[in-house]
Structures are given as C-alpha cells and as structure tokens.
Image (tube, rainbow, N blue to C red; front, side):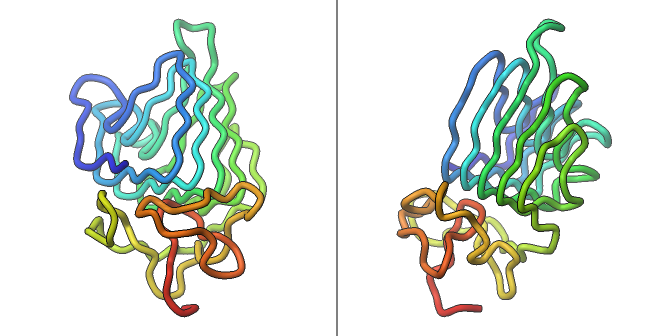
Amino acid sequence: VTFSNNQALQGGGGGMFNFESHAVLTNVTFSGNSAYVRGGAMLNEGSDPVYNHVTFSGNTAPAGTGGAIRNIYALGVTPSNPVIRNSIFWGNGSEEIVTDAGSTVTIYDSVVLGGCPGLGSCANIVTTDPNLGALANNGGFTQTRALGVGSSALDAGNNGTCASTDQRGVTRPQGSACDMGAYEYEGAPM
C-alpha cells in the first residue's frame, strides 16, 4: 500500500488517522502527505499500531507536531504506544516523530533522521542517509521509494523480524540481511 499526496486540512493524520485502534502495517510507503496540525503522515490517538518495513519520507506538519507521526492521548486517558521495526523515517519536516508525555514509541532496527525521538525506546537506530529515490513505479502494484547507491538501509534490517517479501513482492532478504523500509534492493551489492 502507498499513501501519497493526501492532506488533513483540519486536524491531523495526513495519510492515516488511528483513533483507539491497533493497526498492523507491513510493507507500506507514506510519501508527500501533510497535516494542518499533527502527524503529516499519521496521527495515533490512543492507539498501539505496529509498523514493519514502512517507509515515511517527504511528509510534513507544522514544527513540533510530527512530520511523519504524532502520538497523542485519546480523550485525555488512553496513550499511544506504537512499535516500529525495520522502517525508514527520513525527510519529514523538522522532526520525524513527536510523542506526548505518558505515551512512548518503541523503535528497533530502523533509519531515523535525528536518531531516537523524545519519549522513545530505541535499539539499532541508523542515522545516516538511506538515499531514497523519488516515489516511482519500481515494479509491483504500487509506487515505492527505491534505495539508492550507498543506502544506510541496505542489509541493515533484523532478519528475525523481516517480512518475507517487500511492498513489490520481491523476496526478502536479497543480501546478508533484509533491507529497512518497504523496498528490498535486488541488484548486486552497492
């Protein structure tokens, strides 16, 4: 699935808004989405979603409100606690992920511009450029953002939590380890 060029004109979650729900997303791309206030790509309100091999790039929201994701309380009582694995957060405005006090975000084996976000619990975070290509037809049924030469996401994922294919249906891993994000590079090592 690809969520691209969507807007939340009054509120948040330019690409997706989760209210007291627990979505599980695998092999998804969020690109070019925007929100008026919170979560350019996604707003989680009282939600505990799980993301595996998701690419967030080029999404925007006002400074301090989460260019990619914003995690907030629902009705002032239910926190949001997403779990993220083998994913990419790159180039989503002034910050990638913003989480309200009392909520937390857990991130494993992912590329995150700026490193582990505030109120985050992180392991194996890569902070160097994944060299993502533009959103394009790279095969499969949906558009993706391909990994470019020298990508920090190449062979950097955790095989123990690796999806069996990428967003296009390409078998994972193609190298020594699966790639982070929705796209698995299938050529010779870069």
